[in-house]
Image (cartoon, rainbow over all chains, first blue to last red; front, side, top):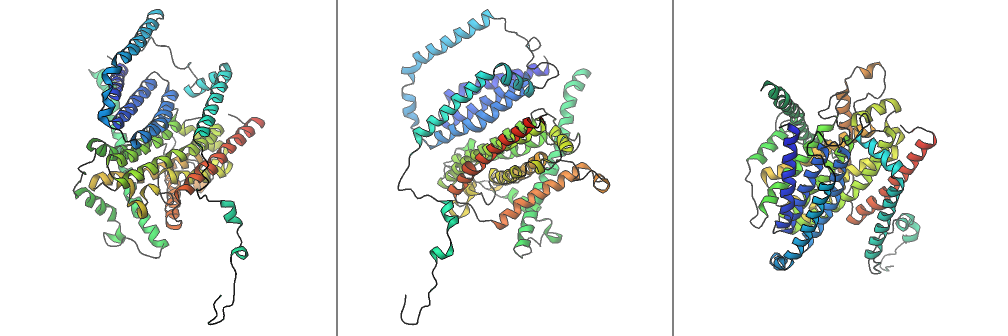
Length: 201
Length: 336
């Protein structure tokens, strides 16, 4: 057994175990933490096949940003753990059905296309002599340029949608107007007066 | 058997030794950074700072470390014990693993990986987990508020940091940290070309490491000390060490991206006699001094001002600079 194969089995086992724990953990925050563990190990798997850029992006985007927001929301929710478990048996058949369909589809994919079974037989992630980032960049900005731009536009629309859904102008909120503060002059707000004794202003 | 030894075990042993060679000086540097901080702030406030333990108080950090080590570890009874203990470890480990890819000199790097910049960016974006887990697991209002503030703040400033890094990457044409430094030997330091970005990067790394004037997560006036309020003894020390190690790591990143890493300022005789790692150390020390200087000088930002600075000032500026950089690179055909 080579070292790479050993590392693969460790990463794969931990990924699957963590993924199971995501749905098995009683505490939702623990679920998110297991999800992060699963992301991490899949990043390790990607690095193992030589796709280091994609592996790092997985960590930066999913672990560093998406999962943080997940955690943010889950922590702030006041969840009743008992209530959360109640519908478990009711939804089990439906969930099992979806899982079964996915499994069948995977089997079909593996059955029709010859998927390599050893690490050595796997296709190289990068052509020789070009590093990973460069190879991916060339593909994205030449062959798949329109798809790449379309993905960008879709994300932009999603951003605008999210902002319009959540943006509310509260008229009673007090906001800082930096320009107004900077433009204030002493003579606008200060007045120097001579105050005579016993007369007041 | 011999093949197995030389092929698998020996490289692991070599790596372990090299790791220790990096980590031990790093921990010493962290200890003496706290000392330097107290001395510098003292000098700025016309005090003497620590003077009693050892000559000029030089043994003070060791005494502090020992004190924390021998204190009792208190775990709050309603805390989520596993996550509570995991949080400081994550903070500390993340502060250490970033150093694996930092080039201290020409060829002096533990792991010369192709995506070094992304690796560092990933490590720094994970730093938020230590804090948010600590805040949640402590089961305390103050700690939780600190954690929420911190996660929002770190996520916000990461965006402008990422955009600034993209500028450097476009100019250098590589994600490898050693290559970026070599590119600066050719082009001149990027602080000259990307000076506004360097300033924004400096402010962003201060916000990213939760240091003053952006230390809202541990705002002692309103949140006691924020996310680490329930921690004691070594668990607290790990947070503390992690924070300072992160400061040094961020300064090292800024040095590599903008100040030319191990390169001397001028390629002429008296400067080239000094070896690269010493230049690297001096530049990191300079940025750390700015950190401490800012702490001694500036008052804390209000939370909405902090968010405004990150999203409405730094983000548009760094985005505009990307457009400018790429336009210049394409127009003058300078792109690597």
